[in-house]
Length: 505
Image 1 (cartoon, one colour):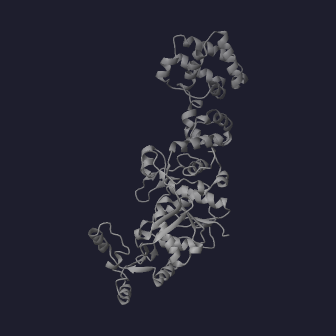
Image 2 (image 1 turned 120 degrees about the vertical axis):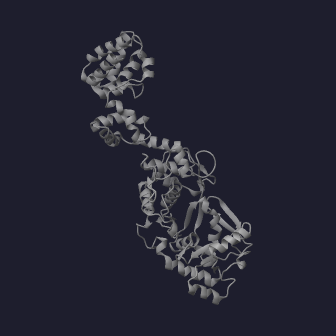
Image 3 (image 1 turned 120 degrees about the horizontal axis):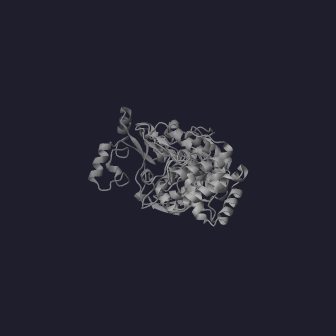
């Protein structure tokens, strides 16, 4: 049995879209489950669309997410080179083979000639019905063809597709897909202008020579599959043809159509794994890493967009995903991109981080705000507030009152919580808290018990005490349990804030 080998073959034409990340992830999960190899191949045959920095971005993004390659660009291996632009001579050899076998032909039609034909013929397609009306090696003599090439005329090589044949593609997700060859056009396989092949030829040749056993790619490539089946036949490689699996599209969070960058800009979520700076305009597109997502949360979220494990489990580590993954459980229909669910995953993974690690993250924020706090204190605060956080960057919004006393008091909360008898209650509370020892005060269970007993003895309703007390400490009605605040503030700071509010309000 052949060793399982898959490939992820992005084009360096810009940042890696989150849909491409999911394709890479599914390839990785499948390869690792099968104990196989995953190849990183760079499809840079379209020189006009090359974007500087895109290749490095792709590799950095996948490394951040924990998607590792066993061979390919930057990883080495025995099947290189792995950039298609470095494989020109390999492709030329195979173009020559197709021409000599009669499965391809040379076409000299200029862009202007093709435009004229499109205007003259509705739904024009370069195929068996029109090829004999065009300027190509099927309509020109060999001498004319040789002369044009010797003269330096630009040409392309097209696949010669014969009509009337039903071509069946066996897809591991969709089953058998049959298309009649009559609807296929004679696709361009090679361009003399840059001496490079198109996607169709390069991928077939590379997949064969790199011994790829499974091609897992997006649904948008399904129409190309019949041509690829034919090319394997033209080369006589039917016995080594990989198995295909075409993944469903990622759909917009609302409405119809596939997910786009515009959706992310409009609704406020990233569609790229990392921030991307356009090298021409300088415009910055947001990424999941810089938005504060944990890589394991992004992986878990993406894995379940178009695949399900067959049970109710949602939270899965990379190892668990590898163990459970199956192409047969991938959906045929598109998966709606629920970005709020992505936030839920990040919130849940944040809860699983231990408080000591969170404290180190929070320390940077505290210092940036001009305050100092020990890691022990931040670890305690993390335990109190992390249940309220979706991202580590939410820390300051939910914890600022631990470091700075209120300068103002929310007017709406003041009107609702600061009643006529509140000043007297707060003065009495101040007097009582002054009698507690520092040890009692810093133990939130002890201090809460003593304050509740004091309320009962004085016939105070808990709401009449605790609500204005929170207002004095925070400045508004927010934050964790009140004694989770006072135990960190300590006796002196708590009494100072309480007295200031009494004087002010």
